[in-house]
Length: 507
Image 1 (tube, one colour):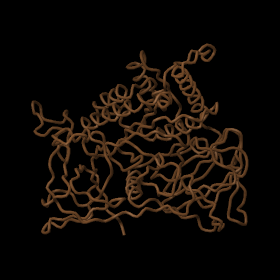
Image 2 (cartoon, rainbow, N blue to C red):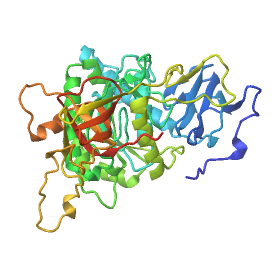
Image 3 (cartoon, rainbow, N blue to C red):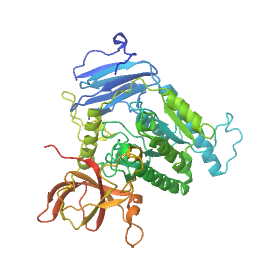
Image 4 (tube, rainbow, N blue to C red):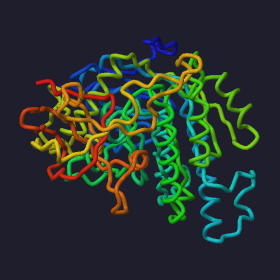
């Protein structure tokens, strides 16, 4: 991707210091942008002024560590000086930024939260709403094509919300929802999930786009260990089984609404929904309209943010403009095109991160020996996890696959033909069959049902996920298999669902 705003003469970087740092001076309302190559890292320290990374404020004098092919932006609205250690694949500054638009949108949403909370507290609204801002919690659906910066926008808006921008309200815990199965979010690719966010989500690697969950963060960490509600779709592309995806999106929406009903302050904080690029217009995919509608209905969306694309904005305005506020925001010039190979590497990193945690090395020549680097806003002393490898019997875990191995769209079936296998039908998987496809497969362990009765067919789809395991070896003669899990424990009597995603550790 070329950057029209890149002007080498505008760079304000000096020579390396004796400690290996390069100094960058940023003008007000400008950005320092960087991209990292594989197996490289950099450290960034705010020397003076104000700076933030996707809405997360940086502390002065602290070095923040970035790795894992991270592509990010440091923004300042008042000017700052940065020290950068390490060698990014690309780095430059730009004064063309969309952050002003994102901050303005954040102010609108903050006003909606304050008005909603005032209603909950029984406070009069006289004088609080001179601009007739809707006195309802912001339920925001973010749409845009591939490589438009949807996840970055969601993260930025969430970070502004938990900071209470611009009035300093510090009690917001909005819900962040991810319905893009191609993005692992807080667990592994193939899942959709939601979690309440009460502290800023930091950016450190491409494998942790929305922070760390309690199952992937070291136990010594106190922040960013989120507890998401997760459902298993099992594919990275929504066209594989859109009927299943719609079912679990509606399940997720129902559970989120139930949670908000018993939490008035959480309800006032609202929610933000990150979506897959397939929700934007394309040459195929009639299912996308039903999926967008499912999101709007399930999460009671009252604001649609469209990044960049005029056609998508016009479509949403025409379809939902009478009942929903449709807002178009510009695409950031710092958004980088991510090709298929990069996305596949990131997904592999996410699975590796879920099992083993993430270790990012301090750049050569930058370690000051004082341990002052922060990774995900935590000390870098302990970043790894210790997964458990366990041998279990075939009879210990009941395994299903939802629908056929490959579910073509209904429009692709011959005229007059109907499916022999429902998209929502759980099919039992026999581990003793050589064609089971279980080796290296990711299995989602389902939460147990509230009742003691037997589970039937589609009930499995409505169960959330309590964790993920990977089948690393199968011993058919002895009817045993080896599974890798981020934590130790017994798996006897549990139910798991496999899909099209697998992973093999590279030694």
